Image (cartoon, rainbow, N blue to C red; front, side):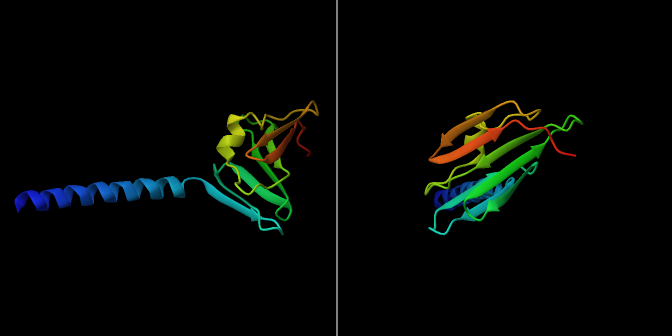
Length: 126
């Protein structure tokens, strides 16, 4: 009988720890969600330093992060197409879809999970 109580207590503690871990992961960063007129949705968590906004509802999403080194440089990502599966900012970063901006130098297009993303090197406008 004593063994059963200890076992249930241990299982309960493990379950509470797992719930806390799941909540911590879900609550980290900021969540962005957008749905187009066909019902396709992009939904992802992103670090607090990033700012995402819709340029065309559910179709064109622009994200940027200001530089942390007291310059006018910033990182920019534009998502042009929404897939059924969506994408995550981590996938975008891991595929080098954003780069630090400067003068207009280069435009790069990538597809991540069916989402077409473009990065344009630009100089921040004053």
